[in-house]
Structure formats: C-alpha cells, structure tokens
Length: 244
Image (cartoon, rainbow, N blue to C red; front, top):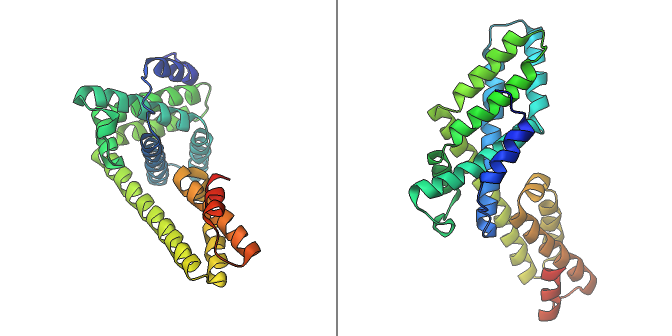
C-alpha cells in the first residue's frame, strides 16, 4: 500500500457522515477512542515483552511504539472509530438517538468494522516505519502481531475492561461532587475547600472529559464565591457560577 497516513485519514473523513449530533454521542465516541488506544498500547507492551529478541531490539521497538502513540495511532484510531460507527449505524439501521451507552456504541462500531479499520491503519503506519529500517524484520513482526491482536476477542474484551475502569473513575468523581454539594448545604467551609481542591487535582479526567470539567468549574466558581461571602449564595449568584 502506497497511501500515507494523511491521505487515508483525509479520504476516510470525506466519506464519513457527521455523527456528532449531540454531546452524549461525542463523549461516548471519545471514550471509545481512548479505550481502543489503551487496549492497543497495553497489547503493544505485551507483544514487545514476549518477543524472543535481544533487549537492544526491544528498546528500539519501544521507541517505535512511543513514536506512533502520540500522533499516528491517535489519528488512525479516531478515524477508524468514527467511520466504523457510521457504518455500524447504517448496517443496523439505528439512529444516533438510539445509542444510550458507550457499550452499545462499541457494539455498533465493531459491527461497522472497527477491528478491520484499525488493522488497515496499523498496516499503513507499519509501511512508513519499515522504509530503510535496519531492524525492519523485527518491526514488521511487531506490527504484524499488533494487527492480528485487533481481530481477536481479546481486543474487544480489553476495550470493555478500560470502559468499566473509566466508568468507575467518573462515578467516584461525581460522588465527590455530591459530597461537595452536601458540604455546601451544611456550610462546612473546611470540607468545601478540601473537596474542591481534590476535584481540581483530577487532571486526567478534567483534561479529557468535558462533563467532568464543566462540573468542576461550577464547583470551583461556587467555592471561590462562598469563601468571599462566608455564606450561601443567592439564586443569581448560583446562576452566575454556572455560566462563568
């Protein structure tokens, strides 16, 4: 295959219908992309560790894995997830509104050819890295094993495993949010500030998930205003905290 990563992504985007009809679909699509990236990353680590090659070769393969992780693989995964969701919706005759959770979205994407799309994308990345590579046979073997992995049941199971962990993280985050609101109801300033500080420290969740970032921003705004007033906020002040 002579296609570059940029060409395959551009062509895929031209053929993909806009599926971002509401924020819930966008959030679930992003979660599925992140889950797929994580599953591939963990598989890549296992593959490299299990390969019967010298440590020096393993170090090169680790460098290759890290090099594709930040850009090439992200682009391939994002495009594959989007296009496979579109195909799955068409094959199953479903609307965006019928997708109520990320597990259903994953099933739709798998039906739409997510695994094959990822396999094709990994092959394009591999071809780029195989050019003039003095350890080409090892790089080829690594990518070949990674391509085969996405076609197994283990890939789907690893995605589900990550999604469950992500759900648990989000649930704990919003439990903390509820604790903050209970502290606000009791005007417990010590807990208000302590919980707000903990929430603001959830950098990974806040940077990747809009719903977490929005809720945290409201709480940080309210905390700042409560500390200033030393009393509960008025309806107008509450509204202001939600819109800032």
